[in-house]
Image (tube, rainbow, N blue to C red; front, side, top):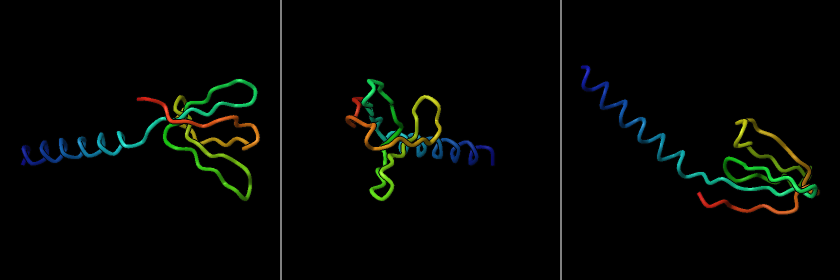
Length: 77
């Protein structure tokens, strides 16, 4: 019984690491010169003009106006 739990835990951890490895960090460069590192690709809402992203430092989901973003690009991980 204990071996089954250990094997299941190992496979679960391996699956989580595989999924987490698929998302790449992105860099948002703002018009005021700041660089924001995001966890995964930001989403642009064309209706509101907001860019939603998960901040890689804080882990919180945040938004910024599209007109305040100078560029977006993928970082080499």
